[in-house]
Image (cartoon, rainbow, N blue to C red; front, side, top):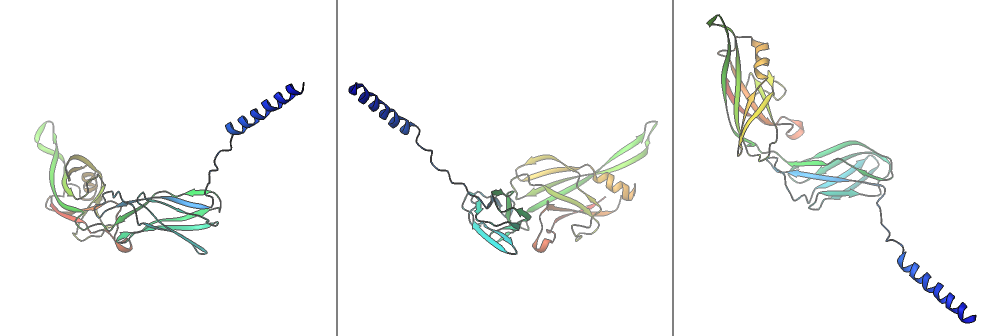
Length: 251
């Protein structure tokens, strides 16, 4: 009987050992609480993507607390132990414009992810390195007398050469003076991209004719305007307009 008991005790001890091996505790996974983090992107002077995102300094600021981190090549940043507050986040790099994200309301617990901060080098003056434009007219004639014109509409095409290798959008405006500011124009946008050949893109402007007709009726002939071309949504120091490439047009 003693032999049987000893055998059962030994078997039970072996089972306990096996159980303790097969159900060993999982490794502890450390999570970061009280953190604000995100990613960055970087473009060069022609708004072409840069792959090495190292050296972008990100600051998280409120009137009572500041934190800072510097990105590695992957562009990721993270600032920990952030107290509750309302923050402004800036991403800066030498010779680049600052990216901002304002009014970030953080409750002081958990991991808060911020939208990607997009940093770009100061845009080069030769972003648009060349452009030409042409005007052509479309006529509506009296079906009973083809010599009688009922209506005429001016259409505009432009071919633009840009140092940007992607399809970064451009802003097109028609002005009455070559040095008009970006907020002073008589017609804007409405372009359709017709073709791309390397760095050269050709556009047709679908709504310029309607905008011009509303202003001048059929009295466009002989008038001179200026087609201003800028990278879309890009501004200079202090929010000033980016200098445009200008093409003179006489209708």
